[in-house]
Length: 306
Image (tube, rainbow, N blue to C red; front, side):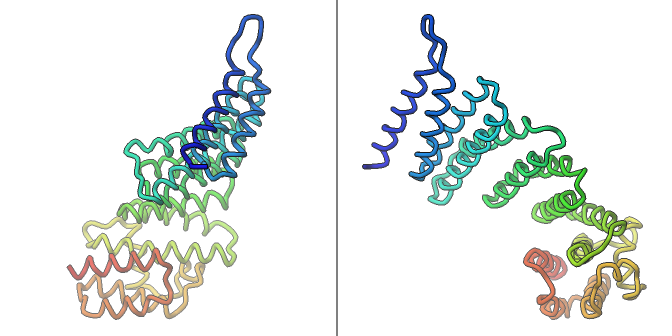
């Protein structure tokens, strides 16, 4: 059976189920039976890899459950509808069918937002939904709404230290991707401030080291001079000009001697505007950096060469 014929069949089933919701003389709409029908249709559409139709079915089922005052079922179905709408939008992108109005994306976000609003204020499920949306928006390179969801996630994660640090890290990466260097440094310093007052283990030391390295890269991209750099930012760079590896923050993040020397060479070269050896320094850095940091260092080197 062709996909077009399948679509007509599904729409016929959808209309048939929806007809149970029509008001008739001396007969109430059968919300419970309609909900069961839409759920069955949603399962069928998912198994047939028809996310747009599946999303419509789950959303209709959610409305029925809402009318029946079943908030848990309603919320669960809204999440399922949202995920199928987003999958439909992703499938369209994969085949190059780009919608100007982005209706699948907007419908998916609306379902997730509605579901998120139904959770209790202290529920981590709402935070999970925001993080799910953030990862989806990053994957499809849609940055228009990303900062809104990142700030929502930050607000929702305030009571959970690990999740809050993760959200701050995501926000810092967002600032890097949009070229907002100052905001990026501020965010990394906020993470470092939290970590320095916490118990440090392998993971948190790695995050603290990331904050230190990324802050140095971002500050150097800004090409600061003694006249246009704040005292807090100046202290970060001074560790690699007047300081040594015994600095408390460097000890806390367990920076190796090799990485300290590389950062020292980088800071000295950039501040003296002696860029002849920057490419060599960049190559030496490579084994110690993540993909994001390599991209950041490439931007830094280009900034001083051109």
